[in-house]
Amino acid sequence: MAPVTSSKPLFVGRGAGAYGFSQALLQIPFGVLSDRLGRRPLIILGLLLFVGGSVVAALADSVYGLILGRFLQGAGAISAVVMALLSDLTSDESRTKAMASIGASMGLSFVVAMSLGPMLAAWAGVSGIFWVTAFLGVIGIVIFWFWVPHVSTVARPKRDALAVPQLIWFTFKHKELLRLNLGIFVLHFVLMANFVALPLVLQSHWFIARDHHGFIYLPLLLIAFALAVPQIIIAEKKRKIRSVFLFSIGLIAFAELGLMLLPSVWIGLLVLFIFFVGFNVLEATQPSLVSKIAPAGSKGTATGIYATCQVMGVFLGGVVGGWLVQHQGVDKVFLLGGIGCLIWLLIAWKMEPPQFLAGVLIPLPENYRTDLAERLADVKGVAEVLIVDSEQTAYLKVDQQLVDRKTLAAIVDAERNR
Image 1: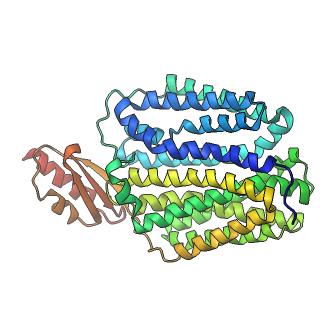
Image 2: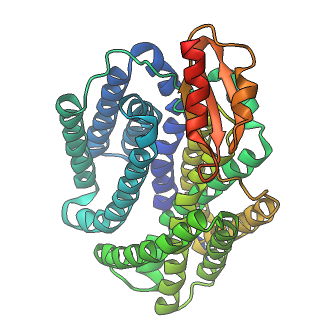
Image 3: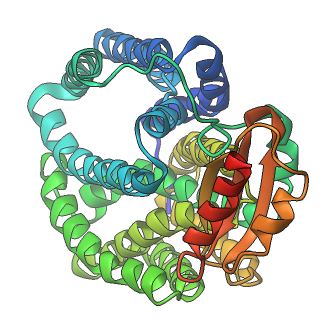
């Protein structure tokens, strides 16, 4: 296939990737700074950067202004800080549900953005999209300022909510976490590269007008999400997460290689639907795997590294996808995605079936006995125990179906009352 002669795909890819680049640079630093400067100032700063970047992109009269605006948008890298604030405001028991609700809202926003974005661009132009995001950013600031409770002091430690600099290298080289970090990088590399190439395929090969692309994405995404939910439930409830995980990587690889052939419109839409199913399952199960695999006390660090690999995939997927579309053709984008997913599948195939463990944080009394960790570890269902003296907290990884929480509470109460 002849390369695209216009320089537009390359610049589109750079514009899309600029957001991921600044996110990758600042995700962990924002989280660490929020421990020193407070959650609220960092969240407000991040939202202001996002709004400012949106305005710069909306007013841009060149592609370089657009890239700068996207870079500034991504500089508001507050995901980790928001999760830390959520940890400040919720109990240990309700935190998992609260984080799941945030994850669901992010998934919904993806569906809405993919569906309404092309329609909005057709009606108001690209600048209209950025004016809308600026407005939404301002709404976010207002909601946060008036409705999100203040936290004057943080009583609980944040090792399971934020990255700890001293643990970054230890966590990064963890073999099973490395597989997941590679996986989320490949997944978002492929996603971003695809969405540099797909608009051209829909318009030039399947003859679907650009302002109708949203009508294509919306039903495919919604039905794919509905089909992904049972797989996610089976993965968690039936403890089949490894099988579902590997099957979904295979779906993505199949879809990429199928799209490479640039099939007829109906077959192509079916293949694209398969891609969305696999993507939805992987997007939901990988964070769960990170949480299960991360050693006790290092969940925040593992999540921070994982998020950084995710946005690096966004950055490089946009840049490389744009270059391939311009110089090699859209089919090479899908070929690279298919090869990348097959390599990912081979690496993931050797993953150990994860233990279904949950993190538990237990505040400890002063002057607890030195054998406390051993006594906690002897409780049925406890897999790991880490006591951090400076935080007076015990970090446990437990099997929630087996753990005897009453015994854990009795051990800590005995220490507190002796």
